[in-house]
Image 1: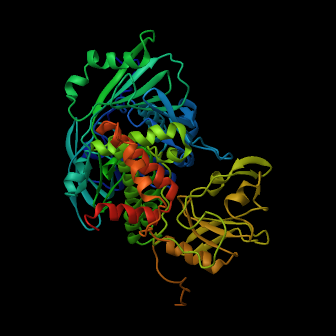
Image 2: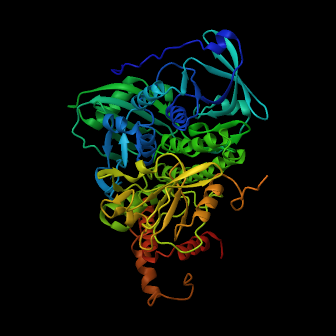
Length: 545
Length: 64
């Protein structure tokens, strides 16, 4: 029923399988979805060769993830992919919540101007994956292997043996590190015997991609108990190519096989859109959801990312968006460890920081789900009272929860942070991702995040600083002086970084602030970089031999 | 500040009559709806999260 033509990617028998020689690879990624492909691109951007295995040979079937938030777009921009996604996708900021036949509440995701990327874009997952596959194909460091299925995994101290099945049979590869991005039903997770615990919700949702020319504005519309679908919720999102995504809450008693049939789906959509709207059904799926996460993000040589590590309800677009941020956190750490520039223990901070973020996402997602699908008659009364009051009284609007849309979780208590020693102005505390701002570079307008690049970076507002870099343990952190290297185009840099007393910030390779100081102190900067690399103690003076 | 547990309503009999009287002609469903709205209105008026938590704890505890 789809008009979209799914690409078929070429399967090739690898040289190692053909020759029967077992090769050891630094990193093997399992799964070529949005998270696995991003992992490959991020590692390649850090000079690391990477092999990606996928058991299929095409992109996601159906629109699936749909919503991509500003932070992942910033990450994909670092990897050279965001512009194509934003161009193909649909940007939106406004969300509307309806209760029965009335508008209950409206929100704007990005009231703050001066950011390069929109708050949220909608894009079918298959389009997004095509853009990522294209970028991987162009990278000489990414070896993308279709029709390669991991069948077993055996761990050793310094690597894992992977048995991989292809159309040409089974062969063995070795990997120093494995990144499992094989989704909520991860086989890899089962192979290492990890627990995946949490809460299942007794509800079912019908999701449909519909092709139509419609007058709905480019906004997220959410209905509680609408006249066309009484007692349940409905969510409408616009995507590219005149495809619209509609999610119908069905309740626990719905029969998933029955409800998927076009003769059941079409009348539901017709009731919503009215008799006069022509539409075609592109894709239909039924899902139920859980909020759960893996016990440890690292198991020996295997690291879990995306839905393989955590699952949330879809309200809030916290699935793929969180997964991309897992990779943003992991790739630089793995690259430093593989180059011998950081101790292996740095990889353990991946669990520390991203399990914390996963718990935050699960908390937000569970709260939204409890609001959307009340568990008892009385909680439904409270929910309806909130929606009812919100129509007339501002006080109730912040209580309306149709999903709190994904924003990055700051690593406030991370062991990699250097806590503030003196009180400093501004919200950019250690553990926070760098806020973008418009800047002038060499006379041209640009953006701060593009200046930060992909290594350690020192940003100082002290114009007397003459250093170009700070070096510690073989790592060079570039120094950007505001006023010397970049100019604050609209005063937003000073505003977002609290520049009243000229501060100095140290950013990690994932563009998170790891330390900030009231003055440019090279020793303190070097110590904070060591700490962010998972090393303890002060900067060691090299001893003469 | 903590949850006020000493008499604070100037006209106790009048208030109680108004509360009950306000629900007298309602079905049980409608009364539940009204109670939910009332809780939300009063909770927002109080605002203080510590006091709200204390009230929720106290309301749950039998006999407390």
